Structures are given as C-alpha cells and as structure tokens.
Image (tube, rainbow, N blue to C red; front, side):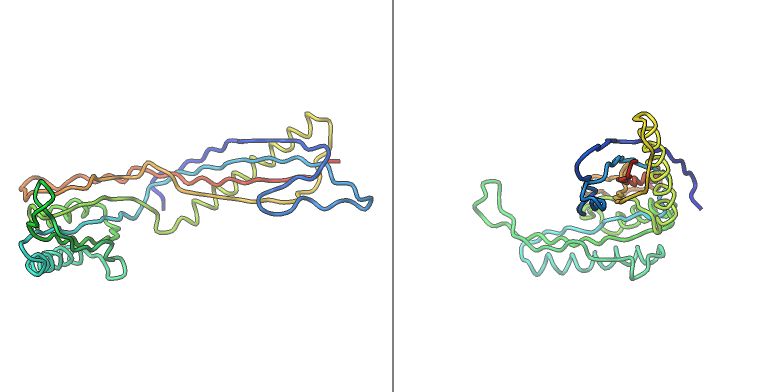
Length: 244
C-alpha cells in the first residue's frame, strides 16, 4: 500500500482537424471514408499524474585505494570491498539486489603530471535496499570499515512495482482526454464520433534523492538520515476522435 498518493491531470494540447489526416504517434492517419475523403478529427493530448512514496533505495557504495604498485592497491581494495559487501549482506541485501557498477585500475601522477606516483583502484557496487531505516546504518557501517577510502557515489529511489500507480495515471489521463474532446466538439458545434487511435507514454520524475560522490572518514555520529520523499509518474495519452 502506498503511503501517500494523489492524482492530478492536465490537458496539454488540443486540436480540431476539419480536413486532412490526423497523425497520432508513429502510426498512419485515420483511413479515408467510402468516398475517399479524409475524416474530420479532433486530437487531444492529456496527462495524468500520480504521486506515491518509493519503496526501493538504490545505494552505490565502494572503496578507492592507492598504492605504489597496482598489485598493492588491488589487494587492499579487494579486502575492503569484500568487507563493504559483507556489511550490505548483513543488512539483508540479497545477491540478486547486489551488482558491481564500476571497477577501474588507473595510474596517478604528481602535480606536474610527469612522474608516476602509483596506482588507484576503485570498486563500486549498487545495492537495492527495501528497509529505509537501515540505509543510514549501512552507510555508517561501511564507512567504519573502509575509513577514508570509502566512496558513496549516490542514492536514488524507485518503486518495486509501479503497476498500480501507472494504472491510476493512465485511467485519469484517458478520462481527461475524453472530457477535453467532448468540450471541443461542443464548442465547435460538431458531434464527437468514434475513437480512432490512442497512444501513451509515461515516465517517473523527481524529486529523486541524491548523495554527492565523496569520501567519508570514520565517525561515531548517529546514522545518516535517509528520507525517501515522494516520486511522481506521468502518463501522457494522445487520442484522435472522429467528428460528425
């Protein structure tokens, strides 16, 4: 059950085509009538919005180590990265929800960029957490283990299953589109006919939580607060009606 949901919808664009074909999306226009004439149409584009509280947090965390040789940097990195992964698993992250997202071995040079000073190894994993109360504790535990070599690249929120949200937004968008088409037909003094075509598009958009890339020293402070906020799904439909 979503903690909070609300819906709004706004008609974005409308148009009446008295002559000529109407194109909806990538498909072809309405077929001509028996006399070979293109049908008169009304085209509306409406948007349905639904807002809910995300239930999945994706955390990207890892370690970056430096040493004189690549082997030394890699050895230390492997040890710390495995400990960070163990922290995530201890917090209940399943294997299917844990994925390596970045790995690199690269040389680094002095300030003049001429003399080789050593090698840097970075290993980041992305973990999907469903218990937000543990998120701050996980970050703190990983920081405690990796110290100044910890890297928290970012967090983002999403829905494990957005089917219900999309269905609500879709129904509202279609309802709004139909209402706008009826208003246009009435204002133009014509009769609204059959629905000839309908296309949709949807996408989630912010706000999405973000934690800047950086290194964090070991600390005894309280767990970092993590708030999921809310996220919106937008379903847009384009509908073409015949008019009589």
